[in-house]
Length: 179
Image 1: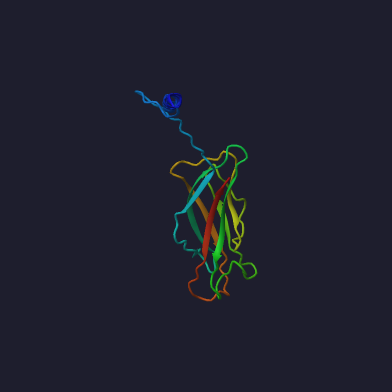
Image 2: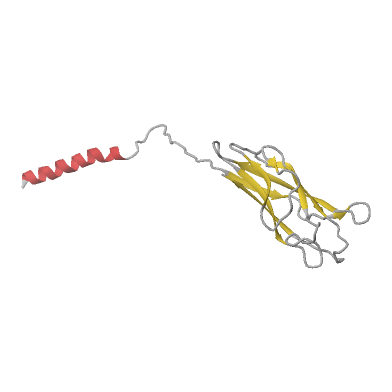
């Protein structure tokens, strides 16, 4: 019985001797390693809440107006891409202009102004109920922390005498993405 008690006491002493090594040691200083994964990210702010299209000088001059927006973006360093699109998600009401089914020659268009690192759309694309490219971004594109302002879409809508009088509204949804 004495041998068994001796083994038990020795076993406990050995366990006590090795257990503290499994835990952090207390000292005057300590360290940790911080790790963060920074991924691709994008955000957009449409700064013109309501874009009023107004007729130019002269009878039946086109309606024009401008929508301003700012963006923040970070694309992947190698092989990254990004884009901004605009989509008419709610068309004008019947009797007035239409994006989904315009009268012949009445297609609403826009011109893009986009600051670097974005590349603006080319020419004057037609507005659509499907997403249309406004800007594109390449690999390692980075905006300012506060965002990049000075971007806009300049809208042109033909002024057709066939439109009924009244106020018509449409909703355009802007989307941004980054990989």
